[in-house]
Length: 345
Image (cartoon, rainbow, N blue to C red):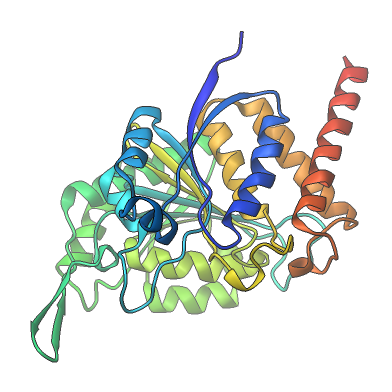
């Protein structure tokens, strides 16, 4: 008898509920049993509960240890703190994992890209440790620790070892930030010494951005501090068609949150126009995390069939289909794969 997975579901806002509904339909069609615990977060949650992250949502993630999250709007230059950052810190989700790989049939200027972005997720400038010293003077703190740097390096090398990746580059600015980025590099080098079959290198962050645009194929796995990883992962998403296509996972020692990394696109919310691919591929990562490999393979293959056929794509990738029609096409491809599999047996 298969296990029923209890998963915290955060639909988000803007296009979040639409893409989440589409993805849930597809995940449930795999035959994997889910029990979804749905919660609002952000502005919607504040209107209902008076809290941006309700206590019940924290309790659900703590209980279930896994969550699937749609996009949540983060105000710029004011308002509430990022929901993403808050949840990552709360549950010590120290590894941000983003695979960057072209979908078949989708033409981009950079074909055959296959990158893994491993980003430290709980330290550095990105966590927002800042305050006003005096009016007109703001201080932002960058805190890097040996513990945090070592465990993210080990995460990257263990993933590379398990999945046959051959090369890891640590990305840094240690020529200027000699203490903080220097500590990050020393920790990465120490871990690298334990993995003789994996080639290790180091590139300065600004040079890395140039090198990526000129020749992304020279890289395999990139290991980055928090802020660098946030920027570089978005840059790399452009190689394969944009943020609407790439998945994201936030992983800790015993808990994980899988999310779409794109924005909430309020201008097209409720219009059945959004592309659910990013959240769907995040759902595939979730299935693998739950050890549902067969289901993950089935969804990924069906998604690739839909892109290869080019008949039912959303507008952002040159098609005319809506969110629900795209989901229907993925479901139909899954059904066809099941039929082929039954005949093969």
